[in-house]
Length: 174
Ligand code: Y12
Ligand code: CO
Image 1 (cartoon, rainbow, N blue to C red):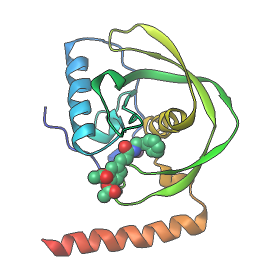
Image 2 (image 1 turned 90 degrees about the horizontal axis):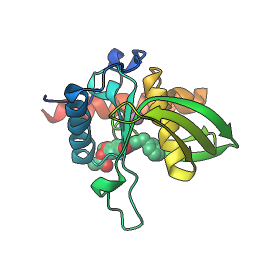
Image 3 (image 1 turned 30 degrees about the horizontal axis):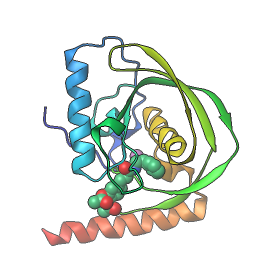
């Protein structure tokens, strides 16, 4: 399995992901490979659609206070559903599928989700702070949405201009 991260404006990122029905060795291999790609790219969260698997899977490894991401902090979240949400907050988000661009995005302050683990066991999780934001960011990917779609008209325009210029400069490097 050689996973590569899809980047904006790749249309495949717009696909709506489907629930995982089979919790087998193939799923475990995908989760393991996603973790390698995420950590290898300095990411803290990744949805399966970002590596072209339109399945309701997201992984997270929120860095601890030393900035480390030990394996025991890895969270594998399959078929998530938000069951409770509260408050509002704003955070400067980044995305491995939109490299080099960070913007403030409004989110719910806390969310509770129900999900399944890699063995199909159903669990619930109450999330706040960065974990809550990361879950909402990754769940948007599962719905085919990127964080840039939540920007105001003027910020989105600014993004498109800057991103296009960065892509052009990158092309000219080769
Ligand atoms: C809060 C907000 C957003 C999330 C979603 C997960 N986002 C990431 O993991 C983003 C990582 C990221 C890493 C990058 O690469 C490096 O820093 C080397 C990057 O690339 C550049 O900026 C060039 C962009 C994004 C969770 C919590
Ligand atoms: Co993202």
